[in-house]
Amino acid sequence: MLAHPLLAKSAGSFGIGIGVFGLVVLILDILVIVSILGSHKAFLVKLVWVLVVVFLPVLGLILYFFLGREA
Image (cartoon, rainbow, N blue to C red; front, side):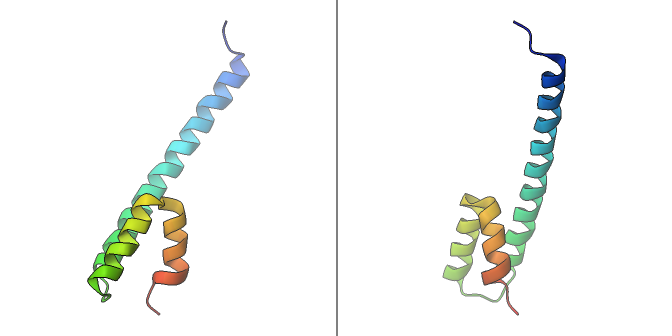
């Protein structure tokens, strides 16, 4: 059975939106990881932050922005 044309079109554009969001999150994750590795924090602190950002990409970005950055 074929899907309704309007539903198929909206599902396709929704998928593109999710793809763009994922790409933005990936780019921001890479920038944050570079920032973490270039910081003056202790090695263990850097390692923990990188793991948080890698395993929790969106939440890790938010947490690092509010808790991990140097003033």
